[in-house]
Length: 196
Image 1 (cartoon, rainbow, N blue to C red):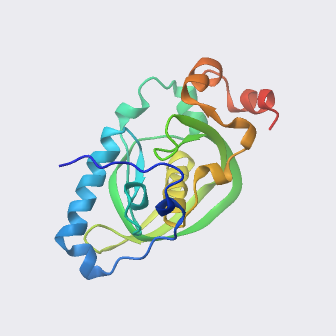
Image 2: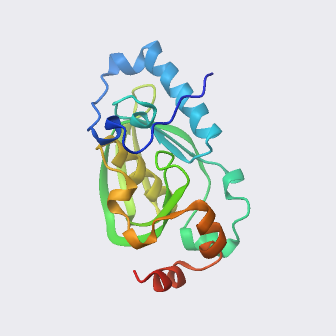
C-alpha cells in the first residue's frame, strides 16, 4: 500500500469544508483504497490521526489509532496528565461532534500538516461523535482526555480548521525546542513560563 504525501499548511485543501460521502461512494473500491492508504500514511508518519484533506482529498473521512508503542517513553504521571490510553484503529465518515464537557483542557498538540511544530491548544475534555464506519455502519464514539483531543483535531480538519487557529500563540515552537525546554515540565509550569 503506498504512503501518501501529507499536504502542509498553506495548501488550499486544508482550508475548505470537506464534502460528505454517500454510502455508494464509501463502499466503492476507490474510497476503500483511500482508507487503507491513509492508515499506512498515518502509521508511517507516525501520527495518531489523519483526515482526508491532509492527503489532498476534500472528503469527510478520517482514520485514528493511538497504539501503545506511541506511548513508550511517557511516564505514568504524563499519561495520567494527558488522560491518554491506547485507541484501536478505526475509521470515521461524515462525523458529527457534540461537546459533552466543555471545560477547556490545554495541552501541547502537533499536526502532520504543520510539520515539526507543537503548540498548546485548548480542547473540550469530553465529546460524543456520531459517524459511519468504513462499511457504512453507524457508530458512536464517546471520548474524554487525549482521545477526545484527537477526535476534535481531526474533525476540525474536515471543517477547514487547523490547530494553529485554536492555539495559544505564545506556545508555538519547534519539536526540537519542545524536547529541549518543555518536555519534562508539567503543563502548569509550561503555561506559567510561557505567560499563557
